[in-house]
Length: 444
Image (cartoon, rainbow, N blue to C red):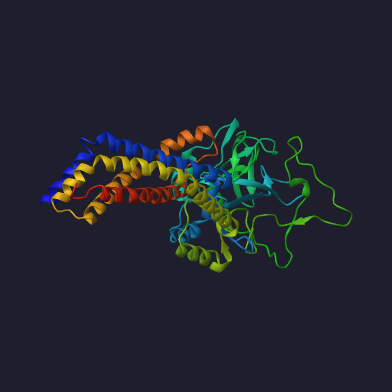
């Protein structure tokens, strides 16, 4: 009971009569922590990519042979994909949409069997929620410059209306006939300046905007053609690119030849009036997937798990290893100075407790008791300093970021700093605890 009374008295003194000294120790330890934290942050800025790009390296997956693994983006794909419970795909899922129209305002196009244009799907609110996993790849920002926009009611009620980019040889009120599937153009648009489509900067990427439901309708009705036997369309290359002055200009074929093509709306030897497909040879998730998820993904796209890699495994792993080694080395050098500071402060507060330690010895406390109690009490203060420092790390990082925009918060920096800080601080406590034992003999 006497020993317990002395121990509780010592602990109480640390946060009452000796609170100023305890506060000095805490502040000094916190300063030491952020000295080391600054060192690791500086090393990270010199060796590592930005945190956004670094997350991409950790969270992406790609097929080694880089062969596209394509799927129609329809209900079957959606249901099978959701069963695998992957994290959200943030980018690089290559979603491609094309549309063939064979007639304009019920008139056949001169010199060709079809015009094929790039398409971006428009989703109703319920469909947007459904395909949230690929939200990044399905965004498209635009301005309506003639006519009107498509309404949510039209999308939810499956109306066959569309928007066309300006200058593509169609106007508001025109009807496109996609081999029996008709679309009415209700507005002309242009992409917003500087809009980022996918991962690549495209200041002016033009697309026809077509309801997703219309694409599903077309994918349920493939054209009755046999590609394997060479049956295809006559297609004039003059229709391939953006029209000149809002009008297609035919290209004359060489004598005794005919232009032939099936276009992009092909999937598993079937040609569709319109198509939306997704290529999963390269995908970036919102977080790193587990080994089981990786195996499930490999099975889903029809490859072996050994054929899947991440950018981290491919070339970023060595960079991280180099950073870890350099950060630990520089932290250790900086920590040598921090430990001297910590030793002096811990010795100082221990001297303030010498009288209490002597009293502890009088009441029967052994040298081992003195050593362990002093060590544990100092470790408790160190742990408190570490918790406070960790909670302050984000606000302090904001200050670091103002000094240098390459300084970014990284968990790896916090972990390395915490590890070195604990080692340095514990080393500082040991001589202090020994000093307390030597200066608290019973005879004194």
